[in-house]
Image 1: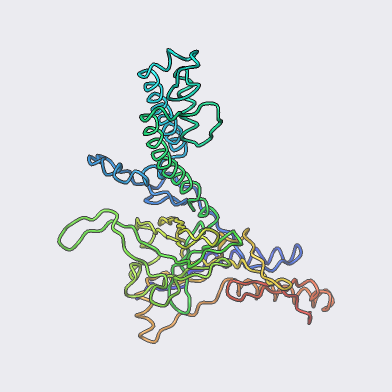
Image 2: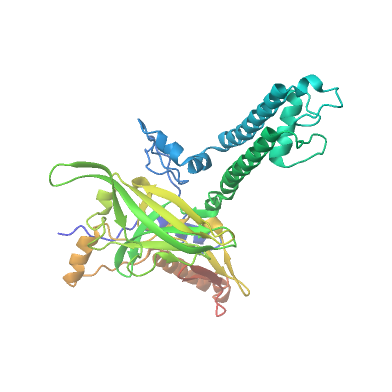
Length: 423
């Protein structure tokens, strides 16, 4: 005896409740249910946070010299406060170092002892102490050139030092300014305007169980060559007894059909079909609540304005996967354009869904058995229609019909409310 059956969540109670509303007040025809995540008593340890942050810390790294072999990337990866500190310290150190060398040359040559002697030709004119040497170092390296302190042609060691400081200063400028530019232009903040739905849902599409989640882009500038990937993070034990913690399994979200390449102009629903290659092939509704896993989704693409690669990440743990739900439409057809309503971006409504696994559902289909899934919304709308029609007959027929608010027409992810002109 198969346990594969449609899931009707308190349909009769909801219909009775709607009947009372029809009798006591105006009729509002709707099939939308807002689903919110219930707070958990214990915080689930995530591999990837909802905002994309990876909860992995690298400890006992002995070969720290590897960070210095790639010093540029190390500086870019530093936090802003440390990056600015390094930026300031590098310039200040070079200015002080070369300022000390200029002062040392003046001290060895005796220029400091002949500051008031007009017949003496110093290495650097108007250099009378360490402070003036420090200022001359800043002017030389930054090519400010105020024109007060200048090097003379009677100091060959000063000419060599000038060349060295000019060359090293250019290298420091190129390195630090380049590091700062990359730090500023990093597309991490661009990922803040890429949205993932708070919940993932499981329902039937074209007769097959599917896992779905929604992605969207808040900006008008598009993500070029956008692609989506998904990974199942779940510990497993091999047949040989080896335990693999946090094993990563690929979840096909359209790689073989090209559906993983997104034209992300409006919010899209990403779908993973439960087939024989899917890790959810033998998972039923009851088993889903007993499993402990995490689904990591990765959205990648190039920022249209800068051409740099951007990556946004999010994750769904087992408590954030709703069985028997589907996403509400977010697109509305207006006069000459489509409008996206992000108020309903995360909202879902209930839909009849078999509680058995996709494998059992496929076995039933192979035997010629089918499930008659009458949608909850159809039952509610039919019940409401009957009540309104009865009320219209009792109240004079025509007046009762005019209280009908119309039906919600859905077309994929586009919804539009249309009044029936015949009523």
